[in-house]
Image: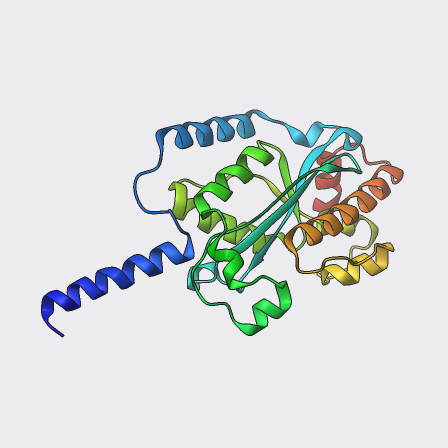
Length: 243
């Protein structure tokens, strides 16, 4: 292979790899997108959700399906699912779901686990579009997730890679409220917590299905927190800080 041919080949390979993981991240950030993100960040800094009564607390419960656990080692987001809640009430009509474009091959294990097919990802919206749509959907609300460190690490990586800015939403793990009822409870798989709460397991390892089950868990323990006399998140933080 000649040097010129080799250089062209490497450029082609580099282009495919970079576009496959988060298609559309190349190029400068759109000024309108940047303005939108800065406005969101400003709103989040000005909000004091900690004093909001639990019965009025607005959150977005979300879940990611990914190719693995390590975004810094090349794992990436396949889909995002989310639903809005006010207090313990799920707004079933107000949900978000999208696959994310990729041309990379999926392992048999991921296909079996998530039921996501490579052809679906090839036709999906770009990561940039999905991320902006999700941020527009979630606005400045608190985010809730089960095993939230996983979601947080991927959202931070994707936001930086695509928008060159930090992901600054507050994310609360379901264990935050679960610990009020059982301080010794360790991190459990989603289906185990569902079984403890009497929640039907449906559409497991589908981002929206998992988000809906996580929302039911959040709502269940939020009601228990209210029964125990907690009025807002600040009181919960103060109590857990003493444990």
